[in-house]
Length: 338
View 1 (cartoon, rainbow, N blue to C red):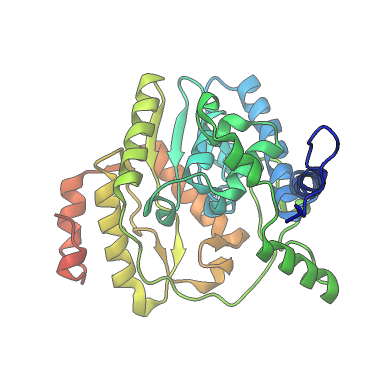
View 2: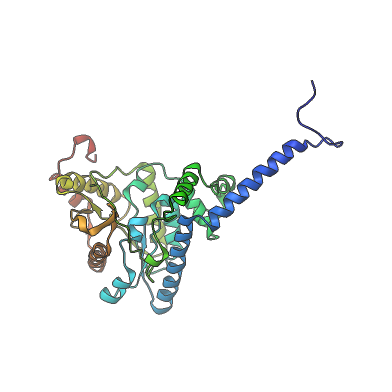
């Protein structure tokens, strides 16, 4: 039977080579779109550029600073200008998007930390509840800004996986085409919403549903926090975890606060935890913009002021205190820490 793949005189399967060439070209076009034109990454690259300028200003003018680490709840909650001008705290908000994953978000914040600084870890509980891994958005962001070290130790980067992550997924492509056809903005947020300190003031408004329960800290999440705490100790960096604020209805308040307390009890085994008297819960819907973890400007001002008080006093929960307070909340026995 004759072969269906044509060969040249020297035995090269040209049809297969052409197909491979088409595949590589398609990947190259997708990768170029991802690192240069993807609206989400364009926005986050702009965030990163603004944060870098603010970091340079702080390092030139002050001997130490407070660095905030986290996803979009951090990015939208911490106003560095307010912390500096009203509270005398030179502060850098290194929050980006939770979709990048805990590893990339942490590595990104670490690039700005210097000996003598304070690192406030505001990673969302969901990011620490499962098996930590490099998310596609995190890989895309790291490569698009020329920082592959954000993916992990640059000597151990899985380059094949990272490069494949540069392809836009089917869902993204479908969503983008739909927005173009309907003449809607290609991304929900705009560069004009980014303040000089890197704080993102959300302009969008959407219907918000109450948060009901925080997840449990996974073994991998606990190990990640332990390692981060050790990294800070070695570099003489003060560190603490700060639970992001979230909207919950008055009816869900007890349940949500109780699950947050359980989560903080687990985190406190890895690193200090700032003493937030609200246990991460806020029932005022007017303080939230488009998600239950993205505050309005007014909500961000309140959150920033509360963080300033906690950092200045450096009040830390002990595990015994958290365990004692857990008894006042209606949690299922299976949800209580051992």
